[in-house]
Length: 295
Image 1 (cartoon, rainbow, N blue to C red):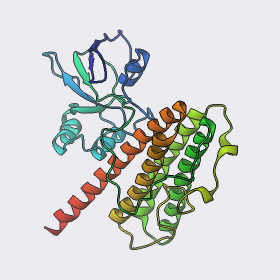
Image 2 (image 1 turned 90 degrees about the vertical axis):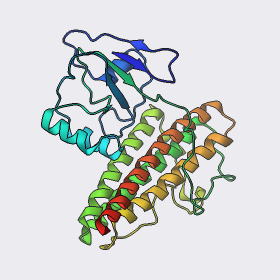
Image 3 (image 1 turned 135 degrees about the vertical axis):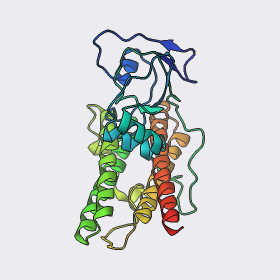
């Protein structure tokens, strides 16, 4: 198999070892190939790759898991025809998650965008988004990680509380959505804690007074259960919070004088940009479904 990416100096060809049942992501990590990933378990979609079959033989059949199928659907990287072909004929789609693709003896090209320090373009921010400039001086890596853990922890707790409140008023669909968003936030929190390693960041976590609205950026404006809240409105509220989180990390990266803090902040900028993009795609599909229903 040949790995291709614009961030690599040249293509890299590897050969599967007989009996190897590892994933494409595991193989890439073993050989230090820069396929980006966050969770490594099919929950985030960051390890998306394009697979091109180079040999003359028909691609091996596979049973596409529901987890991978749903994530590809959310990313807009699988068509209804590909889903049907996978379910009916066990034929693989064009795009896959590297963490879910098990290596086999076949001639393929693995194409990926590669990890980038900063996104090519920042998400469009609404006029309601406050810029985090002035009054927020982060003096050390430990303090930055304390801020990051606080932001992600608050987001997870907030979505989980909203899920409970929505369930109380009988809005099951939105309760399930907020539960899912809470699970994603827990993954982000685990990654922030992993970066902190053995450092106890609890003493570096800021109080609410440091934030423009006296609340961490990724909290939404929603506070109580609403039986009439639609999926579209819930997604828009979550998107607003993600954009605030993006703006916070971007401002830290752009204003710190510490190179290590800047590097870490840029990693969080990239992740938040991906979260924003996923929510925007969900909203686009929701709006398209509404228009179709009214047609």
